[in-house]
Image 1 (tube, rainbow over the protein chains, first blue to last red):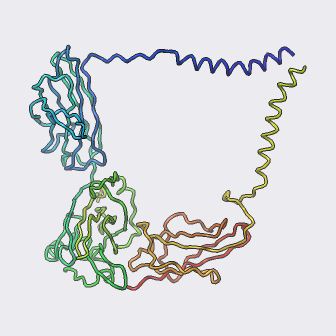
Image 2: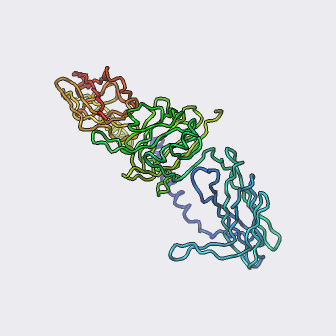
Image 3: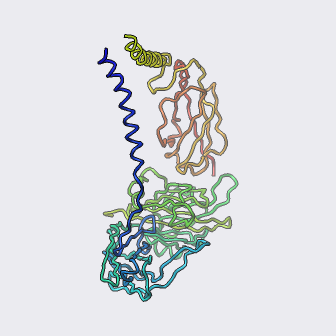
Length: 333
Length: 138
């Protein structure tokens, strides 16, 4: 009997001990961590979304040292692929004012870029600073990866480094805010990422992929439309195509896909290389009619060389619209 | 001995309770999809919607549902991409659709309308509905 009783008692006492053990953990006093007195650094990437050629990647790099030990002397950034013109390291250290605005305080001389290395030398007594680095993505980085090595130096000879990346550079191209108009600038070339009138279209007949038209019909909702030249003529009422303009582009209507790079609206949606890789437009038609502002079309050119997303920024009932496009080159085509 | 029986009582009661609880599940029949089979014999489509590839409706007016002829007549806008449409059925309570709609559906063969079967809540009544599409004139 005693054995059974002991067993049962132990069943209850075990959780009790566990609770006590858990509670005892809380007794330890919290100690403030002791900050390192060495030169310290940190970095964040400030831009999001795909890294487009001619676009930028922004970083904030922070460097600090205990004032008694010395002051900051220089910051340099080395990119694995030299940035395009316009790459710079800001010589201001920013803080946020009460109204939320960024206020810059000059701490060094203007940055000097030499090949892949961009450098700012401090000319003020500075113990802590956060500098912003803007990397303009060069053409030669397309489809490759880029990484960045930040190096901070202080007057007492200490050096710290921080590596960011690697970041994949997109193979996409982007063209923003192209004006199109009914019966005039109506011929859109995905290959050239440009808009032509009928005379120019005749000269570039093999590159015309889409025709913009606006028809205000009473019998159906036609309105703004993007139709490929090779589509059935019922989708191109009253359109006279220049000689040789006959490509059949696959088009798929989309609504509410406000890509941030194209729409420049507040929505954090980005179309990336992966979207183009995965989308299958094989069973799509070659016309898209009744389009509105903030709608768009996925497109694939007749030769299969390009896939694109054409976004409609705005439309006007007078028969004009503003479009933007992202284009991806199909590998091997 | 008294002490011993007291301690045995507690787990025994808990065990009985759990057996009683689990036995309740036996009264609810479910079909092959894990859906409850009920006593309802009604079997019809109450509403029908058709969305384009941009997930915006392509209908020009509400679909005409004939529950006697078991047809759904829909007029779609001129220029609708008939190969990439998303049909949506609203059915009477507890009914289900066969085959299931899993994504975009090709309606381009206008001469041979697609059909779906509505299965009643008691799974005893089955009615096939034809979806007849006509395209608006330009």
